[in-house]
Length: 204
Image 1 (spheres, rainbow, N blue to C red):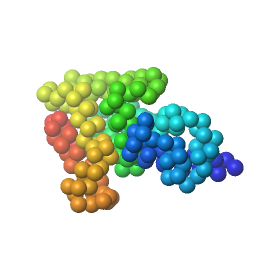
Image 2 (cartoon, helix red, strand yellow; image 1 turned 180 degrees about the vertical axis):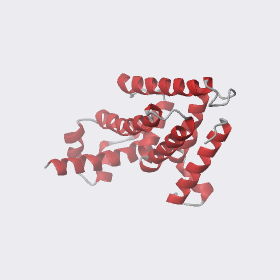
Image 3 (cartoon, rainbow, N blue to C red; image 1 turned 30 degrees about the vertical axis):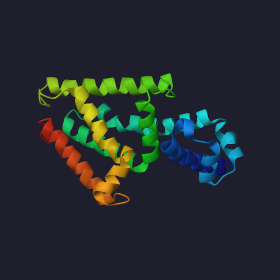
């Protein structure tokens, strides 16, 4: 029974990510989510109780990997090159594997985060402040160019990695591909890493 429950919850969560990404919170209907999941509408309420709870669950599904992506900054390696390289790859992997949840998160932020819980907001804020402080410490030690502002460096990495999910339509039109391949994501990771490291004056 636990396996069936987990499978159904995953189906509903995946479907909800797609519907919320397409229609937004206000425009999404639980019946649309149930139809996309291939389950009765009653199952949506059975597992998540309400549309609000389901939307919160979608946000939580992207918050957790976003937090995990910061792990390289918390490890012992005290040189920015491997840490930033790992972070960029982790952020691209999120865009690749959770594109719909990423769009939901981006839309939530663009609308002033009305549904983001105070706990999640504080978690994101604290983590960002920690990373900025870590970047500043590297800058203070001469490991990053003095011309680089740590806040804007972090913002730039967010923008460049999340664009592969949040602006997937534009990526598809320009590249002429419906979906990016393994090679495409590898090229993206290599390119963004080189841009960041060279732009920051970091030697590997």
